[in-house]
Image (cartoon, rainbow, N blue to C red; front, side):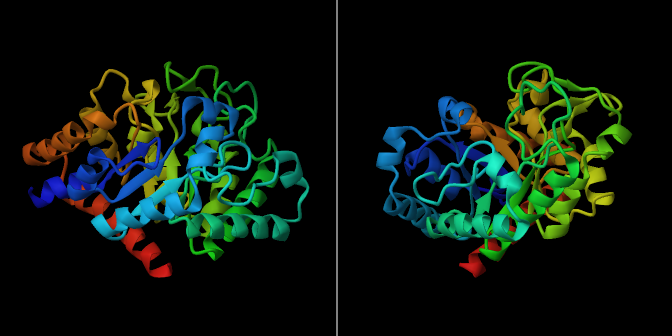
Amino acid sequence: MSSIEHKAFSVLFPVLLDLDMNDDVRRFLDSGGRSLLFGETAQEYVSGKMSASRLESETLETWQRFTGTAKELAGPLLLAADADISAVHRLQGIAPALPEPGLARTMALAELEEVCFKVATAVRNAGVNLLLSPTADVVAGPNVWLQGRTLSDDVDQAAAMVGAYVRGVRRAGMASTLKHFPGHPVLLRQPSIEEAVVTESLDQLRAYWPAFQAGVNAGADAVMMGPAIFAACEPPVAASVSPELIGLLRQELGFKGLVMTIDLDHRSTIGNLSLGEVAVAALNAGADLLLISAKAMPEIAQIARAITTAVAQGSLPLERLEAASQTVSALANRLAKTH
């Protein structure tokens, strides 16, 4: 395998639905993969609760065995899971419970930070080192995607809570991820299955950025781009493939860490492109890590080939792929030193 192919695999971020070190996972790690996301079923995602069978089968020992084996096979890795106050807590049963949203909003910030520190410490003990949380979106109207899944409808309160969450996670030696930039105040369609458009102008969206800025200032290590199409872009395009929006994150908010996409096969993100084409578009836009849903996992080798081909044909600069790969490796290596 060429070094370019190795780098192509290193920027892919597949979702695993269970703790099974199967041939597909081993092949991905052997090929240069540096990141895994422990996902959940659709039912678990919607309910915010892990199934009884999962809670029974996924013991601390099971987690430690899987994450330990993965690191033995591939060295330092990004091993990620959700731990959201208002949505999914993937290591429910292994880590302490997060406070219910209503309670979290009444807590002193130092108390909230301490709760997040304790949760992150337990998650780290299981071998996971990157949380895909907190959600920094603020909802300002109808929102079929995020309703009930954000920290607060008040921008200042959301910003304060995001900062507390990031500080607590960072103190535990873990990495955190702000999502979903540049925010989705109103969303009338489900971006995963429909063309969903955020109609606010950039100036209107900026009013919601204090929550993202608070996370950046507190030391968040990653930012996940949103799935929807943004009418403010010219032409309108999904955030995960928008050079303009990733550029604003870097320039206006001063974010210097890892930029990741939402699931590339979300309808609003992929549009009429193939998985390979949308992966190349995301890298060209400035994304470093490309989220591959469990449904798209069987095509991961094809996606890596599309990236390699794009470099060979000159439609993706080698320097951009190398920069993305280096950003992933740098965070994985840094987190390995804190364990």
